[in-house]
Image (cartoon, rainbow, N blue to C red; front, side, top):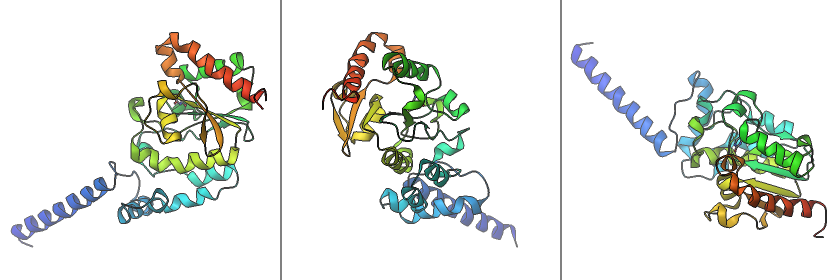
Length: 253
Ligand code: URA
């Protein structure tokens, strides 16, 4: 091959690669999967072929998880998840912890540094505050409730999860809630509550009032990390938690 042929081939390859990356970007993928192409192929092919489909269509291999009959099966279906770009920065998938038959479920935003390292939700400073709310405030053992997050992998620098990341993880949360089927969900913070309620109303307006998540009572309240920065608002969270205690004790029925 002449030098001119080489240059032509290189230009063609560059154009192909550029188009491929642009297609991925349009499909909401802003990362390159780690590992061998053979491992990464199933997800990227599905996503690229069906960029406008529903979450279920776009993540056909997620469908198995929607048929999981236990939390263990659901966790197994998630596998070594590569469905969104958060996989590239995580140490552990933080699935959830607690009583699989819990009456009370807490849903947060996503793992932070400590959670990522330990593989368990709410174990850092904000987690300690949540544990105090549960144990000291409500008089319940932490292992008797169920705790999980909207996204199961740590967003870099603890930034908010992005829409494509939530879309990739949401089916797992939906199934997780379905399997635990708690009586009450406490939504922790703007992000979790707005995701669960598909709402853009500010958390300051949503908190303290009962809502419904597919027939399950949902109490939105402030996130414990917010309380660490704004301790004066702990009294508002206590008001919300007292409503939850009352509901759990059957006083409202
Ligand atoms: N913040 C969250 O939303 N979830 C955690 O697990 C930890 C901190």
